[in-house]
Image 1 (tube, rainbow, N blue to C red):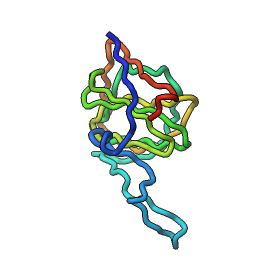
Image 2: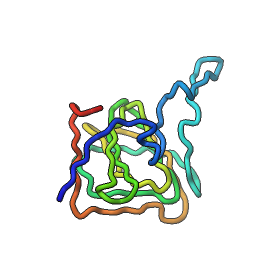
Image 3: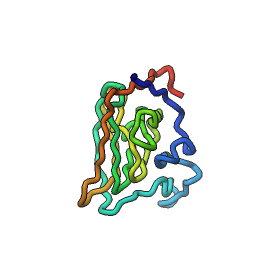
Image 4: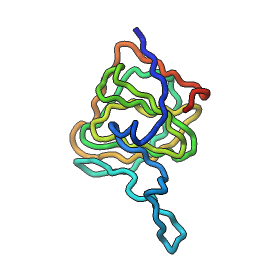
Length: 162
């Protein structure tokens, strides 16, 4: 039987088991460069057993269903949108449909998935969207994938944005 997951509001507490929210948090701010720059400091920490790299991923809209999950056992992976458009994140404590949670991420927020956290690839909503990605480059297989026998639907419309 197909399962539908509904969106929930994104908060530090709700997302903590999976990683960190990356956003301009005033509690993490201080002034630098003679007061012309505000630094929002140490919003997330990269986890890696190899070189940490920066990339740009261009996500394109796809059907709003979840047929698989992936994880990166050797390093964390952070996504920061380069435009102010919202996007969706599916995470799970284990690679099963029942464990999946759907978060709605506003365009001013990024996410860092902890090392080994199950998640769905990028889910952008209405048009292609670029993300600055911080992840690992190094030896060893750093991708595990699990495919579900039956895809799950995402119960998302702009009207149910929390």
